[in-house]
Length: 150
Image (cartoon, rainbow, N blue to C red):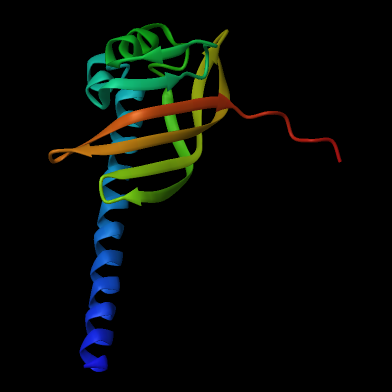
């Protein structure tokens, strides 16, 4: 009997780990789609990635944007929209089989006076699964503070 219990427990752990690995990958793909839509300045595609009641703290505004329409409006005028976005680091944390948090760093290539000016920032996305779709429920972005003096 103990052997069957141990085997069942092992299978449960193995199957859960595999399920969560796919969960993290599926949610991470939303971040890739977001970066592609940002680079194209496709505000409709960006809006579709967010939950209807999503919350956004954007990199270039002190305001909290609530709802996908407000999120779309933010990205229509945000200076980082339409600039190439490169994700340099990403870590995914599975909170549940329907909730994943992505944390990392990205860079926007802004152009000022004809000169490329990279703008580095950090991000946190919380994605939730609704039916078969992963959507952004929360997004926080902020510029990187200067390195501390040593």
